[in-house]
Structure formats: C-alpha cells, structure tokens
Length: 136
Length: 116
Image (cartoon, rainbow over all chains, first blue to last red; front, side, top):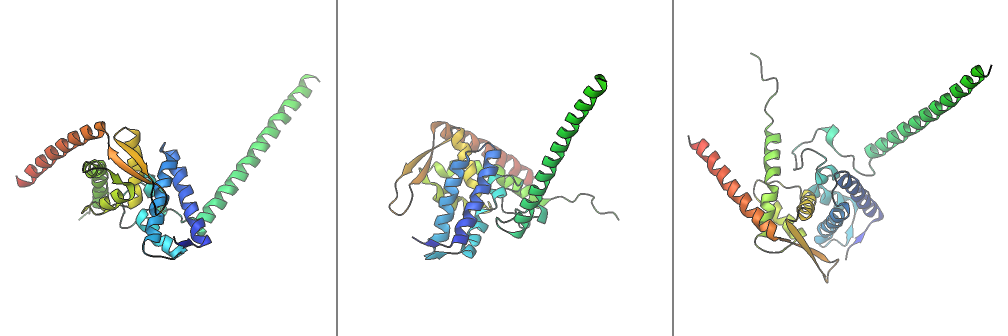
C-alpha cells in the first residue's frame, strides 16, 4: 500500500468535500458518490506502483477524474471540454484562487451580519422613539 | 460582409450528444453481466468518441440505482476496501431494450437523411 504525503491527503479531502457539497445540492447520494470516487482516485494514484503519492501525482490523477463541478454535473459541460473559460473553472482546493473566494465570502458574510445588527438597532430605536412621542 | 452574430457551437453540440448517450452505454455494458464500478468507468472511457471524464460516471450510476435501474453488491477484497459491483435490475433490462430500440430507430432515421 502506498504512502500519501500530508499535502496530497489534505488536497484529496478538500476535493471530496467539494464534491459532497455539490452532490448534496443536486439531491444526489453524496456519501455513495464520494466513497466511489475516493476508491477510484486511490486506485489510480497508487496503481502505477507508486510508493509515495505526492500532490503532483494526485493532481495528475484528478485531471482525468474531473473537477468537482464536472463530476457532479454542476458545470454544464459534463464531458471533458478541450478548453474551459477561466470563469467556469473550479478553483483548485487550497489554491490562491479558492482561498481568495473563501476570503471574499467571509467578508461578505461579515458585512451582512453588521447590516443586520444595524437594522435591528434602528428598529428598536424607532420603536422606543415612537413610544416616547406617544407618551409625551 | 457581416459574419454570423452567434456562431454555431460545435463543442457544445457534441457535449450534449455524448451526455445523452451515457445511460445507454452504461446499461449496455452492464447487460454483459455484473461489473465492478471502477472497471465500468474504465470501459466507458474506452468507448471511441465518448470522451469520458471518469468521475462523472459515478453520480450517473448512483442516480440509475436510485431509479431502480441498477443494483449493487459489495464484495470483500484482499487488496483494499470492499468492492462495489453493479448489475441491471429487471426494470433495467426492460429499459435497456426500449432504449436500444429507440436508438436504432433514431440512428436509422438520421442515416436515411444523410443518404438523401
């Protein structure tokens, strides 16, 4: 049995997590799909007598397996397209692009929370002001 | 002279065509008998012109299983985790016949058009 580097292991986990999220959003059996994919990727990556599966080996394997969007059909082009427009490509888990997208989401999330708090504060303030006016 | 405002997307057309034929390929491969999931994907990848991205087959098989077309059986393996074998249900065998009849009709019709 081949040994996996921590980077390769983490990359595969991130990849499978992304597949699971997308599969669930399509109403598919995510556990079954992820289980089958994990086995497929392991067989492919370890199959060529590899003693050590590195991130490079894993990336090459995943290139034939497909991006999480392709695998789950989230991408309209389910089949290996010769070229995908940049905007349709999946950020590779752990890549700068995926980290940037995660950060962007975090910032948006914080902004929405702050906006929500402000609205709640304004609502209570208006209620209080209304009461004071009514009661003279 | 003006060029076409929206040129025909041949890649998109071939993609849609292949996509629609996947289930037909799966049920025909399974008509030969029970197949290990990994081997089925590898056989699909060998079909000329189908240009399969390997991982896309598993969700399809999962959906066909959910629809009662396929069934699975686990078998212990001495070299790793238990292997999942896929086979056609009776409903799957019936569907396969219907799909093949339709495919032959369609193929005949289109070939007729090409020869006109």
